[in-house]
Each structure stands twice: as C-alpha cells, then as structure tokens.
Length: 262
Image (cartoon, rainbow, N blue to C red):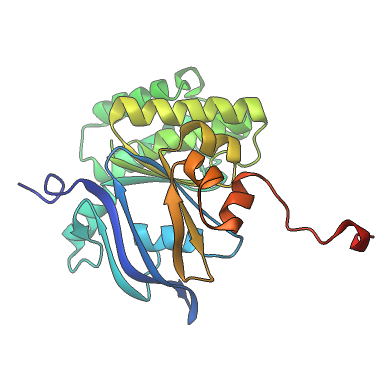
C-alpha cells in the first residue's frame, strides 16, 4: 500500500510556523483536509493564507513544523520525491498566469510536455480533453488576450488539471468576475471535484462562492497564531463562538458608533 492509499487525508499541517524573511505570520497552524473535500482557507488581510499555500506546494519553505501531501512529507530529500509530490497537485494562481504568447491549447500542453513523457499526439489529446472538461475546447486556438475573464480562469484550471492531479489549489478564482460568471465558475469547480474525486483547496473571500460549494472553511487568525475555527459555512455563520468569524460570514463591519462617523 502506498502513502496515497494509507491516509484519508489529502493535506496535513502540524505545528507549522508560517512566514518568510524572518517575518512570522502564524506560529502554530494545525489542519487536515480530507480527500475529495472542497475547502476554503479564510482569514483577515495579511494573516498569511497565500503564504501558507506557498508552504504547502513547496514554493516557500515553512519556518518549522511538518506538511504532508497524500501522506508524503513535503520536506523531501531527492529530486524524484519532489517530482512525485509536484505531480500530485495542480495550481491555479490568482489571475490565471497564462502565457500570452501561447494559445490556450499550448498553455495546457506545457505541463504535459514537461512531465507526462507521452508521445506528442497523446499529450495533445489529453490537453483537448481538459479543455472540453472546462467548456473551452472551441477556444483551443485562441490566445489569452482574446478570452473573457471567466474563460481565462477556466483555461488556467484546465492547465492546472493537465496531469490529472488528485488535488487542486485555486488562489482567488472568482476575483474580478461578475456575479453570474463567478457562479458559473463555482458550478464548474464543484462539478469537477465531484466527478473526478478531486480535493480542492481555495483561497477566497467571496461569500457567495463559499456558501455555494464549500464542504468546509478554515479560518486563520493571527491573534491565535493558527486556526481560529473551522466547519461548514452554516456553522461558522450561525454557531461559531468567535464574533469575528460570525461578522465575516454575516458581512458585519466593525464600525464606530454613528455619532462618530463624519
């Protein structure tokens, strides 16, 4: 039995100290995300959500603690181990980060050409299949500048899925989209997770998206140096013992008394 079969968790963080360049953002992050879950990472601005994501994917080393992906410690010792972990997840960066001088199809082909070790025609077929899954096959030969904002996000998701990873990380996928386009993207993410059994981890403050598709949300807070609370959106909105979390989910601003507002 390999590590992936031996655990019910896709991602585990134990006593992770998060930060970089000597700047500690969180002192003791402990969380576990089950296979197949759609989980949102939440928290106030500057609490370190994106930094934690960079630690998990190995882009920036954590200060201390352990991180495991599918049971494998990300503090790997060999290049072969590193590549094995890299192939277990796909990443969609905020804004999509597509290469503007390549077509949509060529963007999706990139990870396949680098890591799949398949004949060119098989890589092309796999890339076309990913584009079909996100509803963009008819735009395969378009360039990113020729796409709408929602289409660019879909193309970026297709590229992140190119190697058929069991885990997908999405950084602010709905940012900059109108409500209808954002809802369509939420529906796509939900469908892909359920049909393919993918674990999806999302950084976003979009309450509509959280309420629509999250199995669970994890709220990070610098005052405690880690996870303040976690649970379903309904629980966090109505039953969390922490006022800051209830205020977040109910869009309650911490305003001064009316007489003090100028």
